[in-house]
Image 1 (cartoon, rainbow, N blue to C red):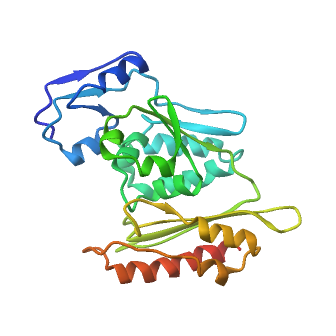
Image 2: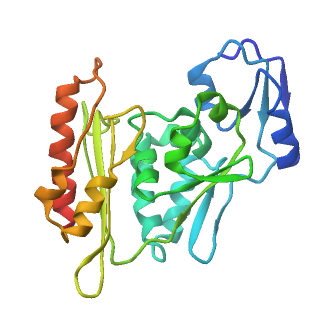
Length: 271
C-alpha cells in the first residue's frame, strides 16, 4: 500500500521526469510492482512514466536495448522476435520466462527488477553474465556498478533502458538452479557462457551466480582461468571463493556447497 501518496505526476519528457525525481519523497512508478512490494510510508508523490516512450525495444549496430517500462512479458516477446538474429536475445527470452509467472510478467517491468535488485533474480543474473549497461539519468553504467550503487540513488533514478551486445551465434549458454520447486526462484543459481575461436580456443568465458551475495555477481577470477587454461575446469573452479548469506532459505554452508555443484554443472555443459 502507498497510503502516503498525495500526488501523481505524468510528465511528457525525460527531462521533466528527471527534474521531478529530484524532489524529496518522490519516486518513479514503473510497473508499480517494486514500489508496492516495498510499500514505503514516506513517499508522498510518484512519477508516472507511461508517456515517455520507454516501453519500446530497439536494435543498433552492435547490440539491442529494452526500455525500462517494458513488462517482462513484452520484453520476452521482443527478444523472441530477435532470437534468430541475436544469440543474446534468444538466451534472454528463455531467462525472462524463468523470472516470474505469466500473470506477474504482464505487470512487472524491467525497471521494477532493476529497482528491487533481488539477490536471487534470474534476470539480473543474466544481465550480469551478459555485462549489460543500464542507462539511468542519461548516464550509462555497467550492471555491476548499478547493483553496487547506494539504495537512495537507485530508488530515485530515472532508468530509461538496458543495452547489451548481439552475442555470438557460436556461443554456448547454460543455467542451473536449486529451489524448493522447479517453478520457484533460486535459492542458488549459476549461469555460464563460453565462446570459442575458429581454432577451438576459448576467447570468452563467463560465470555469474545468484543467491550467494547481496546481489547476483560475476566470477571474473573463474572466467580468467577458463580462458588462460583453455577450459581446465578444476583449475577454474579452484578460483571460486564465496561468502554466501545465512538465512531461513538456506545456510551459508548449504549455499556454498550448492554453488560449487552448480558452477561445475553449468561449466561442464558448455565446455
